[in-house]
Amino acid sequence: MRSLPPDPQPAAAMLPELPFVDVTPAVPHGWFVKHSWTLLAPDGQANVIASSEPLGADLTTESYAETQGRLLRTEFPGFRESSCERAVISARTVVVRTFEWTPPDGVQVSQIQLYCVVAGRHGARGVTATATTPTPSFGRYRATFHSVLASLLIDDTAGGDPSLSAIPAN
Image (cartoon, rainbow, N blue to C red):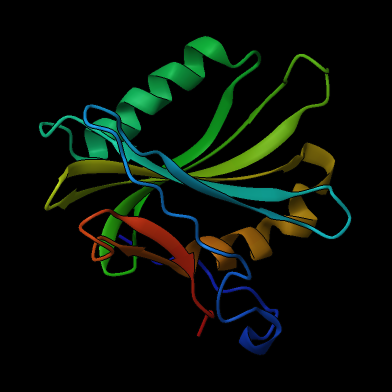
């Protein structure tokens, strides 16, 4: 296993927390919660979207990543995987996949996708974080993507419901 390489951008340049108001609803019986957030580059050419959703108790990080990989291969036109490996983020083993594909608009994109399964008091949750940019811009954003993904705090302490929050990269 490895750690994602740090961004050459100094940690001080990153915000210590997400600047948003957390909205927490009462959850009706039988409903489930899918939590997500999105970071957007100032030029609009890159983003990172992270989410957590409930999963079956039998899934592991590896099986979750494998299932997601099968979906990518069947549903993403021109899908081409360049790497898929384990890493450690937030003291958790994660799977990180790097790939390209061509959405319906015809503009090829490159993505780094991270997967982690967290077992909490309210059952297992799947965490997915996806960094995306048009393929010609990937070299420009790759280090920043790695920095953002490496800075994730994957925490299952908020009411037993895992959430994602950014912390400054060290």
